[in-house]
Length: 283
Image (cartoon, rainbow, N blue to C red; front, side):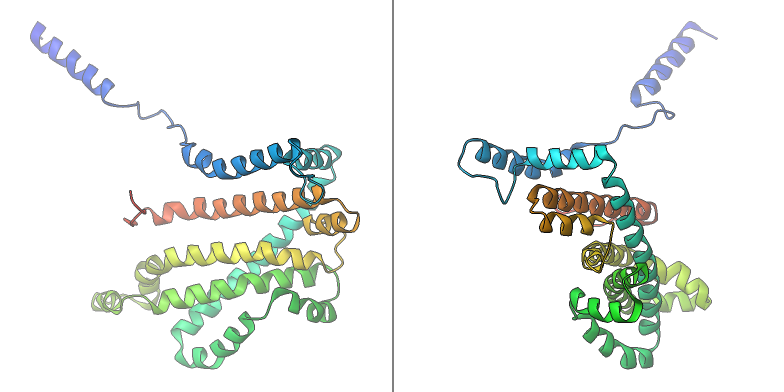
């Protein structure tokens, strides 16, 4: 091989090596969105801390972040926090699975059968307007004060947004897409798997996220029903003992757990939604 050819191969190899990172290197995660999202809460916390320390506010009813952090650290270090977190997370998980499954099946049935929709949907829309606390005495009467009533209440909160989201998504599928599938002689299962499911998947993810958010809201009402453990129990305990720092610490734990659960759904759904070429709001 000539010197010129060897030099050309070497230059080409160097160009390929310089073109980008090696394929076996794992790209580092982009932390900028997370840091940007934390900017406003951190600024608000620092501003309130400075207000209390400067004497402009007493911080008796709304304690500064330093006191909340101390209360949270004491709960975590003593081991008292983790059983409460586990109990609440287990209740929300069970209620989310039951309510989400029932909502998906009912939404599919209502969208597929006009008769089912006319018979059942008006009653469900009326039940959807009932506040969460209104279900508490009825569930206590029916199911007692144990875990069954708490999980049932959370499942009710999850059910309605999932049901409404699935039904609306299926009924909103473009008729022309379905007709194309029928032209290609797709069976009912193939039509659902290859056309209907991809079409409703973005709306389904949003419905599940909304249902999960309501599940975290309903668990507070559920844990008011004679619970001896759970983050809602910490709220009640802080109220009865006059501990606003414990109350805000429990609210903060609720926020962190809810955000983590929501991020989990988004991460799990991301591979199935890579085909989307959607508008990203100014990008």
